[in-house]
Image (cartoon, rainbow, N blue to C red):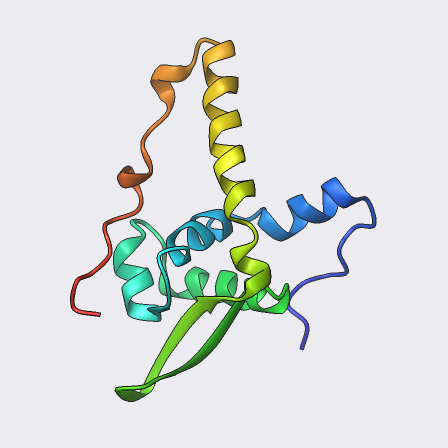
Length: 127
């Protein structure tokens, strides 16, 4: 069963189709820290439900951005990690964050921006 529809042909629309979604960019940002279990992602991202988390991870997996594997120390656990294609989004996300700050400043809305830490908690040290 396909989760996503065929992506648009225009490159900018294709990029937005891969990155758009309530939590996709946040998930990619968090996974830039390295492989993480589903429960770790759920704990690190404030406000994401398990159902939506899994849906967004599956969509990113289908887009070739994320892969999953069983955890080495827990056969029932699943660990998600960026693929090389997913890792290649790092400069894009950094540029988007810079542009968003510029956009907010230009529209005199810089005070409305919140730091990533408002949604993303630090990496768990037990991993």
